[in-house]
Amino acid sequence: MKQPNNSATLARLNERIGNLPKNYLKKLKECPKLASLHSIYEALGSLLESDHAYLSQIAELIGRDPPLTSRLLKLVNSMLYAMDQPCANIEEATLAAGLDKISELILSTPVIEDLQHLQQADSEIEWTQFWKHSIATAILSREIFEHRKESSRGDVDYIAGLIHNVGKIILALLFPENFATLNCKPYKNKLQETEAEYKIIGADHAVLGAYYLYANHFPVKIVESTFCHPRPSQALDQPDLSATVQLASNLARLAGITGIEKLPQPKWEDIEELEGWSILFKKDSSHHLQDTLNPTLEQLSFFLDSMV
Image 1 (cartoon, rainbow, N blue to C red):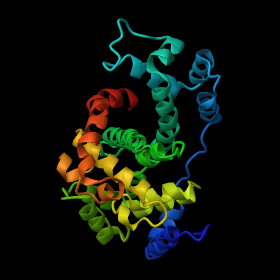
Image 2: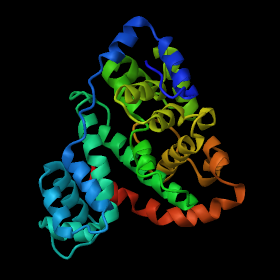
Image 3: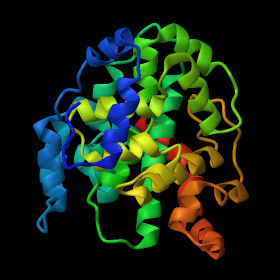
């Protein structure tokens, strides 16, 4: 792997990947590539950022993409919005959802559509639960970022949360028998899970996912957050992003959005013991963060049912 910007994180990732057996490394390099994002999403993203975003223009662009239209209508007709009667009009649905939710749909839909092509059709894995956890992590990553009132990173936080577990798909695709064995076992925490993966495969899902994203030309900061989300203190370039994703993933499980991982459901006091917490927050900020996130945590399941 070519190493840009002298990133210490990429050097470490390169070393970990280089330790894989040659036949595994060959499989990883032959893994199908992500399709480039469609121009419609780029156009929609630009329109939403414009000071002159017109509802009719947004609705027209959404209407050109069936998966995006389907998710939008499913969202506004869910219990979350409690519509008096079913909505079938895209412009009305766009107005009901609001620009924030439209933005989340735009960010999630092409990534999910691309990555779902990598999943095996005959898999026994509950991939729907995987995607619900991924989207929940993305939403909570953005909420944590906004809570900290940092300067804008664009959509990096959301995307980092959305694809933090992409290595699970790579494991299932390239090593299905090993993945089935690993996935059926319960683990005390994320680190125990990654240690088990390393013992059997020679690399954990965080390493494989990070390498895959780098090969698909994702920004280094997202490659690092994927690589280091189980252990954010090891992130050398932007540990706060890895910490944000770690907290968001655990908060999703706290809300009952567990994904496919057999990990215990944490409590708030467990969240405060994570590496990511000590990187991002002080001990006395727990109640304030809880108050900020509780509305989102309460609505997550309704929103996710309409997304996946």
